[in-house]
Length: 120
Image 1 (spheres, rainbow, N blue to C red):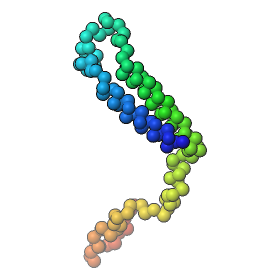
Image 2: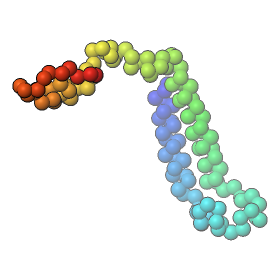
Image 3: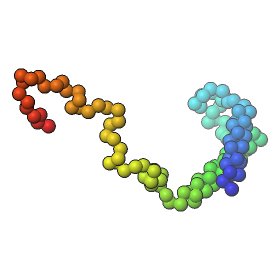
């Protein structure tokens, strides 16, 4: 069922893109131009305009349907719960893999210097 709705959803998206690209451009972006603007009132609805509204409504319906189907399929399990099952406990993971031990980086004490323990 989910695959059928997803296929219809993708076809609606492609059709909606095609219909929007076929429409006549009003010229000028962001409300500039277009001849008349708010003075002329509502523009006449064309067949492509009506088809755009129908495709947009169907696209929203399929989006909501896919959301409901995905919510039912999840069965209340969080993604973090799924990740928690596959990760090993924190004690088994090395603190910083690939980094040398800090004590190995210190130079060896010289024979004439007294050994003084570090205060960490």
